[in-house]
Image (tube, rainbow, N blue to C red; front, side, top):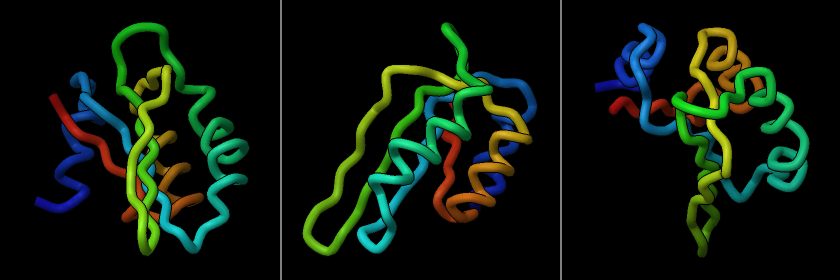
Length: 96
């Protein structure tokens, strides 16, 4: 199963479990986490339903993830923006 197969159920209007944006040690994670990610997600935030948002991080000697305290409604425009800003392979939508 490739990343496109994982995205189809969310875009078909089904609930999704989690939206993950992943970063690596070579990226300026401070700028991304505090500016770019919130700006991309803000128009799609919802109070109920939608996807839990998780930020993944991996460097040479450390890896982890942080679950944010808000949710987003998956939409084609959101996924396209995230992929354009952070890379196609850094955006993952997991279905219920």
